Length: 377
Image (cartoon, rainbow, N blue to C red; front, side, top):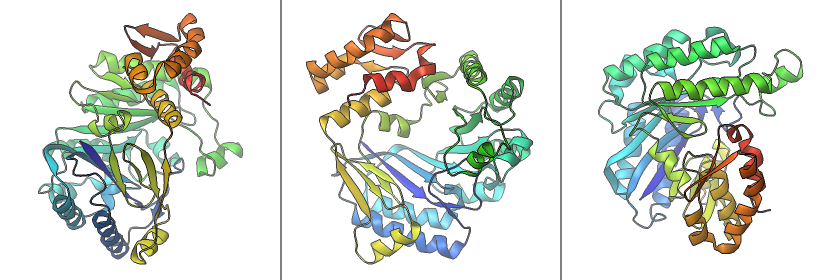
């Protein structure tokens, strides 16, 4: 089993909080040229998964929904030519709400995309303008309604909380609006002020005020409570799913299942090493066309694998499996982990249930501190 991630690096405008790699463009000729080079990369790397069947495909960005149906068809044709894609593969498209018009969804109907991840972020028009999002609240609602009309039975939406000026009552209203849509999956993230973004500058200039930690914690607790009340399982700190609708693609990342990443800045993992493509669209196109190296690679040490496992596993509801830890890394690293976990077990920020070590309801608020304490440096 393996996965494929395809990075579509184009956005039509720059969100004020986003520091992901993207290029501001909606020029279809430029996107066509990019797709041709992307197809060439897929051909170049067709043997890297050693014949593993593909269980998940994820189109992310950027804004993956800038692609039209013909561009998607070209990509799917080449994927089917070189990879064995499982008949029940989860195939996700990240989309902006305003892209999911009836006409666009109709054009996607012949394609094998069976899961949508819709970047709603908030249903508050004022906050959407502050985030420099293209859509409004009505379009966010319509996107989900339209997707249902065109047969999508697996829909995820993204939400952001702790927005500038947001209070607890507004956040609860956002959650209620999201829950009314009865989507299968919700990802919710506390806003972070990434260096160099417009929002980061606005905060530093005093134009917006960052939400205090106490309010952020209350918002997070309300989120978890409402998700539980409405039948969503918190299977990772930021991810909530109806039974049977966990993100297979993201879950595969967390289980260290190999995946190939195509496109600028895309990452790959083959079980032994990490690889990441050059970020710039221009450099990506130029270097592939000129048969030059377009990626960097890092061979992972046992310590790297241990640290990655701690960082990923402790964010999930299952937590750290100490039996797996012993089997995979040996007694020495198991002892190291448990010795460093002892103080957090004493304060009940960590819980030991059977052979699994997981975050408690209080520990989840200091997850990053606990993770750093358990990692080997």
